[in-house]
Image 1 (cartoon, helix red, strand yellow):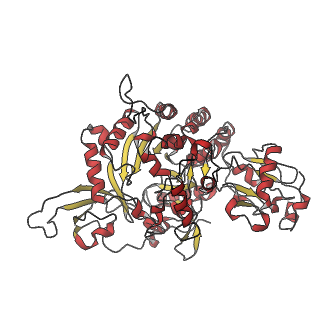
Image 2 (tube, each protein chain N blue to C red; image 1 turned 60 degrees about the horizontal axis):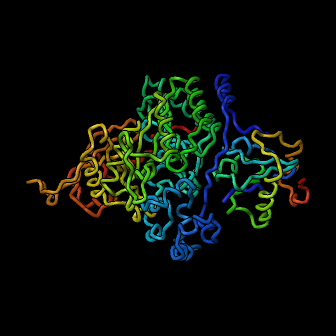
Image 3 (cartoon, rainbow over the protein chains, first blue to last red; image 1 turned 60 degrees about the vertical axis):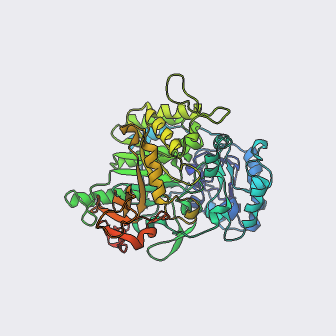
Length: 107
Length: 477
């Protein structure tokens, strides 16, 4: 099992998750952060700290975000490992809760 | 990053924290039964659950007897390697339908929510216990914190239902400061609970050693700065993944000690059976070390020696006695002897609590006492320190003795008696040392098995539970 970063992270990318991760399994893109499913130890420290509530345990992922399991797995292989919190994107608050952000994901 | 907490480390703390580095670990954790069911585990793990075992477990999925909902399934590669040659280790880590035959049990064993003034803290005895992780590298099937690990809803004193949450540094720091200020104002004793200042915190969960060095260091320094004198770390990682105790971890420990030399550490380890740390030959026998004692698994030995060589920390072992794992006096004798020789004190053995599913795991209390007693015949005094403990709502209780012959003139003692003694109590433990004496019940696996045969009860173990809400401190804002 693993945790998965879902759609609401896109264009918000608050980054609180990175700071609390005990195994540094976050990988950073331009407007999204992903979890490496092979490195995640299911400690549940990231899920409650995300201001956008974008992180889910794999079993609790909403049905319409199932695609994000593969997206996290794929992008974790391509993106650089991030171990301290990046600055959140300037208009994070504006994008928090906006629907259908997947098409805005910068790979 | 958004500001999510108001605790600011001091300059001294920050300098220590800045010096700590995390490392990456290769635990090769296998989580859940799904991969076994789908045959997607490494080749050498494929036979770990037989086809028949898998079929039985699959049949329970989506029913109220699903084993994974009661207690998640998890294992590390290291522990699998030990399990291959050990029936006790398999019983410890392999899911089994027996776990859910009988779901009788308390949803919050020991009614711990009564002693939880802030989220993630249990302040029952003189020390405080904090949850810092809600998972471990591998899961013991008999875990008595299954309600935390499985994130089950638990009833809170105000009537709401929610899973137990983890402790947060700022809230805990505020709680400790407030508590100790109230103690100081009370002339050295808390006005409501009568406790002295809070001096010791036990980091628990789950297993604190799943966290990285930086997270652990953050807790250590925050607690040290708040005046905590002793920090316990409760962990089974020495059995599940001893390589966690690597150079980067000891680097952090040593730097912590250099920064806060008066904040001592106590590692509470949880070896259940010597198969978790002793090597075995092809016939399954332990191997004599040419220079004395028995030969340890190399990675475990390395970790234990590195811990033990630091004379400013203590290591103690405690473990429950569980059917099929360690109800074996010879194995327990070997374990107690080898642990003591390697700087690990034998602290407690436990009777299982009344968790959901406890009937699959718990030994009759009287059997547990006899097994431990047998195991300690042949141990020298310093090797035989461990007492048999069972945790009552009121506190840890020692099972002191089980007798077999009638006591003339004592009604109810026709088959002998069981003597229990309260060892630890809530708040300032006014009842510590008080005993309860009951008539024998060889089938009793919990206190309830003695309800109808109490001979003498000055400890109040069999009286109605006391409402401790008056002991709770005001909510920390």
